[in-house]
Length: 258
Image (cartoon, rainbow, N blue to C red; front, top):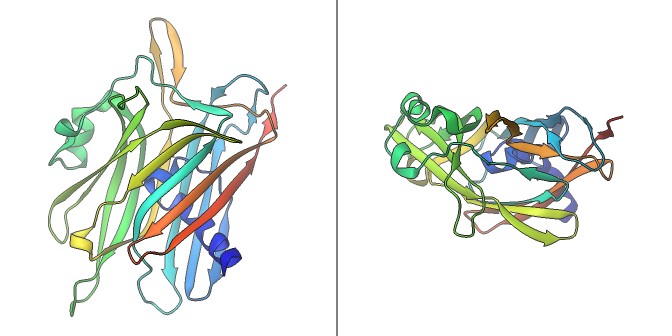
């Protein structure tokens, strides 16, 4: 079952907020057992310097369903390891706070911290209460640069707002933690909030991440990478509410820019 599990959750990288920041998966259409996954992801430009980081933009999107029509399992926690041949830069970049985003809809959140936005997209979930028909709930997703973490590490505040079944603001804090683990140089861990009291299941999403700004006369980019090995790589670990834990490795080729 291990190889099937790895294949299955390649597509989920682009489905989820923290996974979308990796965006290493290629276009994918896959059915494994009852579960159907469609996903795409990548970065631009693909031609990068060999030894020096250059600005890139990440994008990813996908959907998760089942052939039987049953709801897929609910994700509880997502951990992503990122290639060390890249970086997240926040020098001179405005940041937002939980207090500013609390109890806000999408328009209010974006108006509160417009200069801190580093990514935008959308997500859809199915809410299924016992003995009731399923309800589809959709929301824009906004990624904000957050205040530095306990050790000065960059952070992201992922914001979503659902108006059904009841108006609710969802904020997921994510720390981008430097690590030293072979090819991997960064780690993020996100605890996925319960949707509609645990009756909501995320089924699709898309996200684009990238921002450029000028600070003290110098240009900066939020996401950067280099093509030192001919590829960029990420590893994801997915933990579900029923205790299932799955992992997958994602690889995307790059070209050395002349």
